[in-house]
Length: 321
Image 1 (cartoon, rainbow, N blue to C red):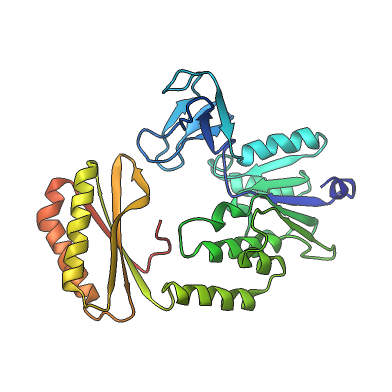
Image 2 (image 1 turned 180 degrees about the horizontal axis):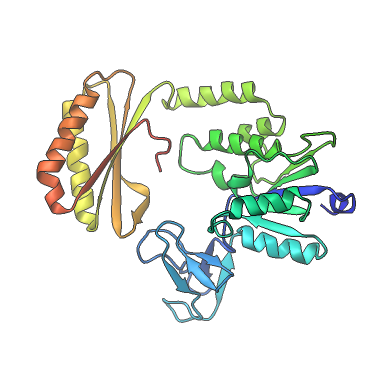
């Protein structure tokens, strides 16, 4: 970075996590401050000294004491774009930094303003989340740095490797697009992972073949089709009960070759005070699937909806989280 700044060249730094710290933890009892409405830890934002939920928008001030044991040993863990911005300012006080994430682009026209400033050479470093990974074409960018490439790699989702490879290759493509040669540095705890390894050299076909082998082995798309059925309710017992009813009904009414997996609690088990349970339908051929799903929706509309249940069905889901 120092080398590029001396040459008056521009740098793009990519971190797919906004905020300052990922979570707040009590060093005495281990309590993590969570959202009241969602089953997710609150993210610390330095501006306004607030803890924010990135799912429902809930905000609260940073606690002075642990809500469980009243200890004052509250510490911030994990790194977001705000923290990186602060670190850059300490390391390179002379560098002009622009941060581009959901927090800095809330107002109308802010995307264009930030990109115009960077394009006009009014900043040396552009730091941001995945919104900076695509479409930037500035001749003076000669260095791209990916901070913690593992944030998307280890999600409990069958497309995790694909999404990581996509992001890595897209953000890497921002450097050296014109006359000047570009360099890309990827920071990762798993450099041996094929998604990182192949994105480093922009090798699409070898990545494709490896990913297809993994998908085939674990019976995921495109070798199998998926349908995600999700049940939510404000009462955890009712959500669980009706998810079980939906799953059992599907098992009884679909052919024996179709796998109905679940029900299980979703990866984020509560969002906006609603508990989430789901089941996954895996199949190669199921000619009666749509008909049976329509019948299930009919049962839901005539009986379950009165109990406050919400049923959602996603054919070919882009994520199973």
